[in-house]
Image (cartoon, rainbow, N blue to C red; front, side, top):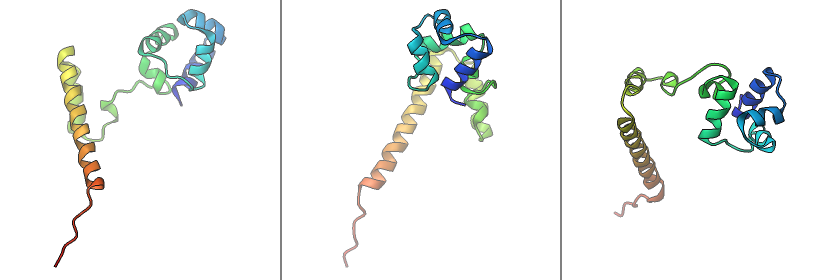
Length: 125
């Protein structure tokens, strides 16, 4: 289920109209409509406020009632364990871990791009 549809589902379970929900969250009704129709991705602050108003976690907004973490969706047990342990790091160290991962992903994209963009030299005999 999409984020917008999940928000709408939880709003309706509480019996709120979009206008009532918008008042609770502190946003315009039209903004709620755009979010629920998946025409707009709410900011982190708005998403946090929505989860507070609905009394559910932000994760539950993304997954149909089942909290999920990035690590829980990993097939590799070593990566899963590493991400579990990384949650215990301080905020500064978490930023470093994320930057390292982003750098490795950028490196991989560059390598893949170079393989496609550079034609292989033809052998001349």
